[in-house]
Structures are given as C-alpha cells and as structure tokens.
Image (cartoon, rainbow, N blue to C red; front, side):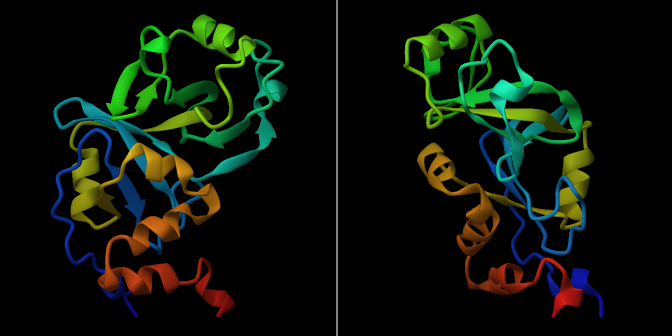
Length: 196
C-alpha cells in the first residue's frame, strides 16, 4: 500500500508566508520533523525560509544549559536541526525587547538578550510569555516549495493565542483537526503503524 497516496493532501493551495504553520504529513519518519508543527519565522522564495518546531519539548531546563539565565526555570524546546548548539527565543513582549522581529500579531522573534535578562530579573518575563529553542529549521531557496509540492507539509493558519495555549504534546493533532474532516485519517494514523 502506498501510504503517500493514502494520505494525499487534498488542498495544499496556500502559499507559505511568515506566521504560517507547517504540519508534517503523518508518515514522515524523522526525529526532528515527524509529527511536527513548525512556525515559519521568515519565508522568502528567493532567499529561503526558516522556522521553529513548536511542539517538541526537551527534557532539559534553560538554567541547565545557559548561565546567563541561571535563575529562570524555563523549559527548552527542540527548534530544529540547524545550529542545535545555540539558544533562540520567541516572546509576546513586543517592543519591550529591542531588536525584536514581529512574526505575527502578538508574537515576536529574538531581540536583545541583556534586556531579556533584566526583564526576567524584574519578574516581567515568565514561562507564558517567552519560549526557548535549541536550533532552528531552515530551507534553502525553493526547497520548502519543493517539499510542499511533494506533500511533505500542509500549510495552516493560526494566531498567537491559539498557538501558545495549545499544549505541545497535543499540538500536531489539534492543528490537523482544524484542517477539516478530510484530514481525519491523518490524526487517527498511529505514530508506528507496526503497533497496530
């Protein structure tokens, strides 16, 4: 049986853009990308794209790997296979952090880490308004569009409130269910078909 045909995407017609989600097709068997929900932080067909895996928390706390934030007990997420030895952050604090980049309404990427540390010390920053990631996900120019044409991903829309309030371990299934009844088989497909 050709699983790719069984799970053929019915309507992958959305052009990806900054702030969109990429939902991996259910048969993707990859440590980083299997059942992943990726937020596109930037997308440019001529220069490439980069995003962050939102739904894969690691069994490590920020204070264990970064001295600067030693008093901040925050979880760390796997952002992707590129630059896995670097920490990146996403937040809802907007212009409170200089040098930040707006991804969508209410959600921002990066910025000045000294300011972030000061806001943590002042109690303004907590685990609900900032998330930390090891690594990121990147595509060269044309690579993501090619993967979309092969139905490796489906593009989905979201907003910052829905994205940040959805528990990471339920995120892939929740966003697939938002895609409609034709994707019901996706959400019911077991992670390991041999377990059935």
